[in-house]
Every structure is written in structure tokens, then in C-alpha cells.
Image (cartoon, rainbow, N blue to C red):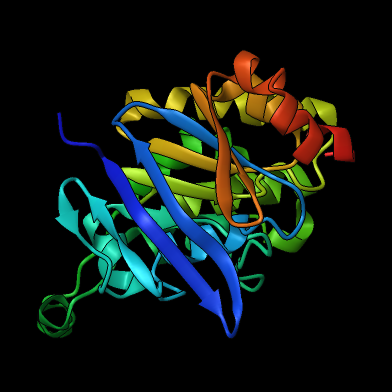
Length: 248
């Protein structure tokens, strides 16, 4: 069976520092996979590399069996691999609905030329669907600065989902959320595979990671040091020493 995402021997260097060190990782369709590790372990660098914002020194990234290692971020997005950012990257001068609409349609030069002569409304149904899925319909005409931290995180998630991705990379989606908001986010993440979107989630909130993930991979000093079901990883002495015991 072909993996949805297969990372082989991935290595990333920043000058003389090895940020990611020969990492292998696999995600199958329908999985929610967690990636944890202490600060500086290389988690965000790993997501940056998967999404095309950082070039690896070595190794390969395959999406649905196709090597995307040398492709640009927008090409990976078109192929079905999308991400969120710790900083959210919302357009504060656009409404919630318009933030999703911007992400709903990735234009090509051909569609741009076509739209000059035959303008049309892109993806309104997809925007409405995702707003409804995330409980954001009542906030559709609000602006991001009017929302709570949890609501803003949902808008960022909605921007990723509206393009109907195969795989969503989430970078610290629970940052700044209270326990009730984290619980709601966990519930939503568990529903995503049924919509066709698998998930790789990086977060420090262990209640989210242990509660929502099918498998957890642990990164420390750029290397995967443990991998398995959440309850097994939680009790792994290597993980306790490298991450949980460090105050994770």
C-alpha cells in the first residue's frame, strides 16, 4: 500500500548545524499523527521542509507516491499538502469568510486569463461547507481581530481545509487555547480523516496529542527517538527523559 506521505532519510542543515538528521516518517491516508519534542528539536523545521519552505540537504519527500522534494510550496499545496503557521498568517482586513475564500482557489496562469474574460465566483460552496464544519458560520462576516484566540485558530484551520487537501500540517494549533477550546479542537481534528484530510500535528499540549493521534513520533536533536501509539510513547523512558520530563 502506497503511503500518503513518506519521508526518507530527510536531513536539513543550517550552516554547520544539523537541524533534521536522517528522519524517516510515514503517514497513511486516514491517520492523525502527532510530532512532539522539546523546544529546538526541529519540529517547525520539519514542517517547513515538508511544505517546501526549507530545502533539505538530503533525502526525499513523497506525496501519494510522487516525489515532491524539489517542488515549490504552492505546487505542493496544489498536490494536496497544506499547512498552518504558528503566527496564523490571517488577513486582518478581510472577513472570516473572505480569509477562507482567498485560500479556496489556487489560480494558475490559465485560470487567471480565463477569469479576465469569464469572471466567476470561486468556491463559495466550499467556503460555506468549511465554515459550517468548524462552527464558524455565525462569525463569517466578522474580522479576525474581533475573534478569540480559539476562533482565530479555527479560521487558520479553515483556510487549510477549504482547498480540500489530502494532508494538513498543523504547527502548534493549540497555542494560546484554554482547555475548553483545546477539547473542541481535538474533536474537530478527529473528524478530518472522514472528510479525506489526514493530519500531521505538532504541538506541546499533551492532552491534545495523546487524545487525538493514532501515532506519535518524538523528535529530539533532529532525530526520531520514539514512535508508536500515544499510550506507549507516553510511558517510553526515552520520551520521558527527552520531552515529558523536561516540562513539555
